[in-house]
Every structure is written in structure tokens, then in C-alpha cells.
Length: 342
Image (cartoon, rainbow, N blue to C red; front, side):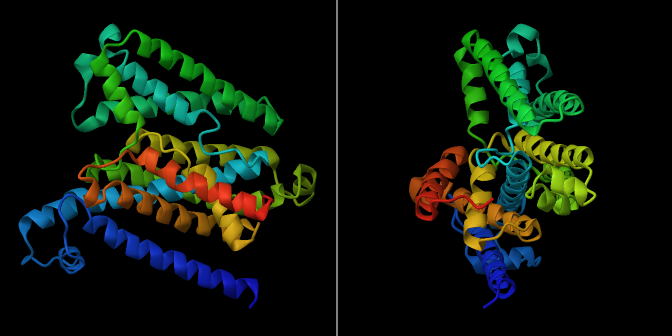
């Protein structure tokens, strides 16, 4: 079987897993709801229990859609970063975007009392979302300014890591002087959460997500060229500065918006591109991009489903689940293959 046929089967498998996990994800929880009832609710059947209808439409479907966007968005952002920097350890947060969001939330929650921000706490978590967005935007502006002056991608990577260290230091200082209640609020945000997102917030997140995904797919040809080296890419007519700018913007929009709405989600953006490369044995981004979209969504739905299993009787932190499930898989794959596909 040629690669095209093999990849088609793999895409069908990922698509089927995505649909099945979506249904299972919205069926499981503290209240078990039959798949048949879920389908009836989605189709608009009024004969189903109103309590079930409320749980599915107002809580579980938005959460499942947020999981799909989070997993796929971070996976695509991670793929772009690994290709741009030619570094297998690069992820969507390597530019310091997540650190900027964390800093914004830290100022809002931990610095709330000292800075007088507590009086401006918005309902339904919008204050936290706004603070994270402003923090991400601030770091994005600095990164883009630096990118316009630094031509070396590795230097930009190091600068991004330094931004992360700097913001972590400021957060530590704020945490040191904060009362226990504020520290607990910040810790809960840092665990990541898919369950506190409304349809209104999901609409705004969807807009940011699709803008980021469209920008990412628009540079697929450039990403393929970058694999062959900067000089070769230039001979193919690729504008390195323009391509790098679009890649940075797309990654920042995806990582920044997702962190703002669901909190920092570890591991997914780093690991999924590796898992997809190993399974598809491909380096062509026309294959890797859609595969990462599906693979990231599948992994995030699986982790979220595991985090809310009824036998636990409580919801585990999604950040912990993504790392516990994914890290051993990647370690096993890398030991087994003994080589990264780049």
C-alpha cells in the first residue's frame, strides 16, 4: 500500500476516534447520560429529560468543543514551532505567550489586593480571561518587535525562554506576598479547566481559533521549505521574514487565546506533533497539519474524558492528566524509534 492509501486510512481512524470520544465525553460525568438521549437532544427532541438537556447543551457540549479546539490548536502551534526552530523540544509556549498570560492572571488575582484590582472582578471569569489576554498580547508585542530586529531563529527562541523565566520570577514575587485565598485561586487557574466556558466565551474563542488555524495552513508550503534549510527556502521564493512573522502570529493567537480561556495546558503542543510524525512517518506539512488537528483533538478529548470518569467522583486537573497520559507514550516512542523525524 502506498503512503497516500495508508494516510487515508489513518485519517479515517482519527476521524472515527474523534466522533466516538466526543459522544463518550459528553455522556460521562457525575450524571451518566445514554448516548441515545444525547443524540436525541442534539437533534432537538423535546421528550428527553430537561435536566439532561441542560447538562448536555449548556455544560458538556461547550466543554467538549473547547477540548477539541484546545488540543488541535496547541498541536498545530507546537508543530509550527518545532519546524521553525528545528528543535524537537519547542512547543507552542516557547515564545513566552503562556507566561505572559500567567503574568496577567497573577497581577489580576495575586496582585488584586495590593493594586486595587479586586473591585473590578468581572462575573463568569471574564476578568481572568481579560487579564490573561492582555498578558499574552503584551508578550506577543515584545516578541514581534524582537523578531523584526533578530534574524536568527535560535536567538528568538532563547529570548522567548528568557521572557518565560522573567515572568515566572515576577509571579513568584507576587505569590510570596499574597494571602492563601488568592494563591489558591491562582493555583486552580494554573491547573487548566475546560468546564467553565460558556457559549458566549466559546464563540469568541472559536473566532480566535479559526483565525489562527487559517494563518497556520496558509504557511504550510513555507514550513515544508524550512525543513530543507533557510537558504534552500529562499531559492524557492519563500520570504523568510514574512513566513516567520505569520508563523509567530498564528502561534501566538492560538496559544494566547487558548491559555486565556482554558488556562495553561501542558504537554499537548509538544507531544502531539511527535506522535503524529512517528505514526504517519511523514515530514510533509500538508499531511502533518490536518493530522495534528485531529490528533490533538483526540488526545485532549481522551484526557478530559479520563479526568471526569464517574469512578473518581470528582474532576481531576486536566493539566495533570495530559502529562501523565502523554509523557510515557512519547518516551516509549522515542526509545523505540531511536530517532526524531525532522
